[in-house]
Length: 127
Image (tube, rainbow, N blue to C red; front, side, top):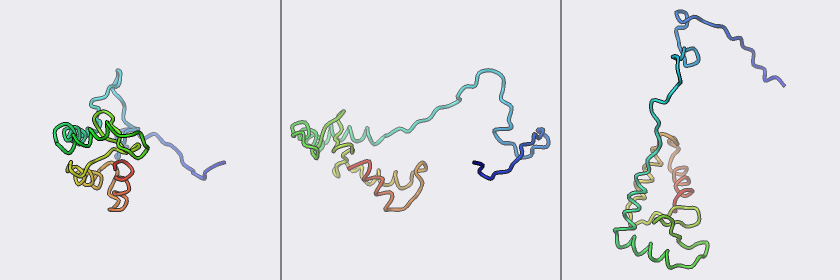
């Protein structure tokens, strides 16, 4: 089935191609290499680790999770972080909730979708 697109591709030499794009550039000879690689750094995880290891409320929560039953709704400790099911538990005493909401709300990766979608994204990731 044809999609109904009719187009022709014409070669334009560099001097005639005023709007040069990546497809019309000639790559230098040799092996292509990456000049830089970037990845997100989750600084808040370090802050959360610090909360659970140094703050009395965090230590108490971590201790409670280590001694609790294995019911599905209970806090579980994984790598010195607390989880409820698949959600990362952010205690209100940590002070990280406002910071995370601001990060999700103003993220360049996710876009700005307003309060309700931001809170839904927050609830899907954290508890």
